[in-house]
Length: 297
Length: 331
Image (cartoon, rainbow over all chains, first blue to last red; front, side):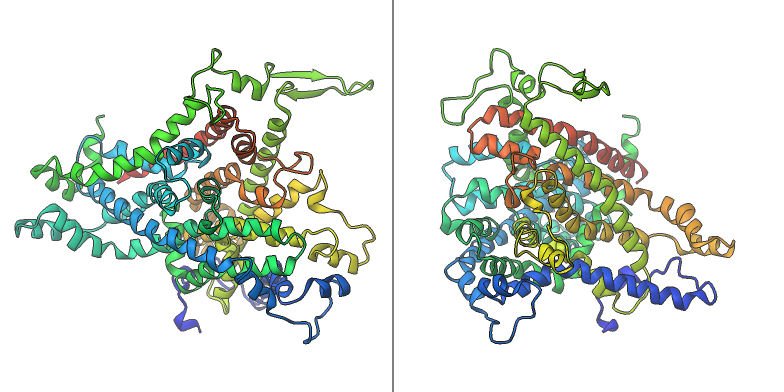
């Protein structure tokens, strides 16, 4: 297991564990016990949701939450119901339709910007860079109403396009920040060689800089997938048609639909989580690289 | 201005600049236009909206005769007063005594959220990072358990925790009843508890985030410095306090900035779990703004709340920008 551990780079610098003689063994044991208890406690809400989702509300009301469900009451019906009649499958499709083009759009536009900022000297370079850096910290509330009005006026209220447009642009700040700093680390000599060979700037960007930036792009894509997929506020204000709701906004309606049927609600919530969870577990290394890249060296 | 040439003194830029000056704009035009259209101009427009009493439906929003009256309605016209608490004297200080009641609750809750966020998840995340920053068996799985909440969306967390807090059959009260607590609290249904219950759910999500940031920071701590301290016979606590923690200072700054900004942005959990209730006791600025705009159609008033949120964030955006600028100058 340890050999294929993607989190390895995080773990291989060892600090403060110089053995202090005999106390070491006991200390390690205590650390393990504490961590195990904490990790289990941490996951209790998720396990509880899982446990709820495979039971019926009658069973829970009758026997209490902590009763051990007999095999006869375990059921997958809640998942089926959440998937079909509660429309989680349809919401998930909407989420993908919004997320994938947003990712492509933001990575393309940000890499163009980042390329210009990383490679050229011009008067507005730093001001533009700082505008994007400031944008990464911007609270969404400050543009909520005007974006809502813009979308209405453009006649794209209740379209996927509205969501794609705002995600693409709103996330540009962070992507530009990451990509620009990554691109600055690429040695310039190779580009100069290409230029001498008569390559145009766009060709250098497209054929050389983009492929070289793939590691940074992969981290960004993983992280932004999670963010865009999990967005709630924009979905809430830019889309109201049920057929178009992404899974976050769709889930929020479940509470009203199935007021007390918690097994169906939790089953829906768990299904809604699957895509981001899969991406996260599979691409954990990229996810974490993306998150930590802004946090300094 | 004098430092400027130094900023760009990296060779690739100097060479690139020699040849074409219009090149950057070829790359920048479209992204900048879109960014201006969807982010920059909307941001500025909110300031304009905050000086109107627009309802979202009637013609164009126009500035009110008293442009700042939305703000004076939010904060009231007095800054602070002393108020005698009934007959017995301990006088209490009231800040913004004439403020919009909901706004005052929201502001208080945001401050609570902020105080919790800059203390609890930060400490817990740092502690976990210190524990997990070693070669250890199952280390990866411990880490995964702590940062799984991070990939759950707000509505998912809101729904799961609403179920955990559910007064009768919910996980928490079922456990409390089983442990013999006769009359367990109603959590989200109780005015004094609800906001703390929501903040706790939010902390649950935040700890893993802070842990990741500190783990990355620890990775960059020079082991030789640590070893030197160990050779000098420093205890683990001294080592942490005198060597490791100071070296983590840049990460700590970022963690603080992120915590503050995240606490100001908090919206989804409140919206899902209580929508500000019971009796407005869990209202936060972001949710209040949403309600004013999309339920009461007071766009101007909502814009004023957004400006207040922005003003608070600005302080911390400033800190963040200053740090980034410092990095640039060191380059």
